[in-house]
Amino acid sequence: MDLLVNLYSRKLDELRQRAEGVEATIRTALPPEQHIIKDWVREHFSEYWVSEVSAAMAHQPPGCLVATIDGTLVGFACWDATARGFFGPTGVSEDQRGKGIGLALFYHALTAMKAHGYAYAVIGSAGPVDFYVKAAGAMPIPSDKEDIYQGLLRLKPKAEAGA
Image 1 (cartoon, rainbow, N blue to C red):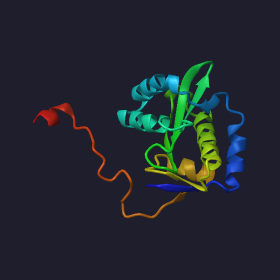
Image 2 (cartoon, rainbow, N blue to C red):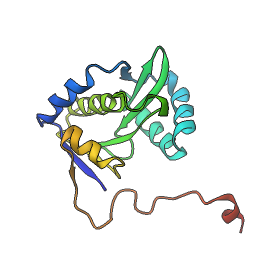
Image 3 (cartoon, rainbow, N blue to C red):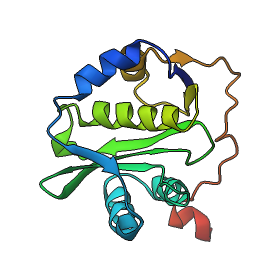
């Protein structure tokens, strides 16, 4: 399900307040660390998300944020990766979940999108729908199971590919 976030909603003020006390440093990723981010995303998430990180890093400034604690990468968030105006993908390492890092990454990405002139952000194929609804007042976008990922090429398991 795709969601829509109004970047002028008062919910973003509430989100900012919740994101302020997070222990991690949130900042825009730098091009020279792209390989580190991609390797980390590949290890913790998926090759598809690595492709989206590549797309987000391809524009200036990069549409990829990182969360670090003591110089260690613990999370990331992209915007303008699959399509303009899209937030995601985003992820936090398992051992750091539940500490508000994902929330802070979400807030900072939405703020960056607003600064770049967007009035709304689309969250494509949103995973934790309830999280986005509560955090930013995200609203479902009606569709008939049609979205940007329709027809996405998928890797087949090796046993199937050789058959």
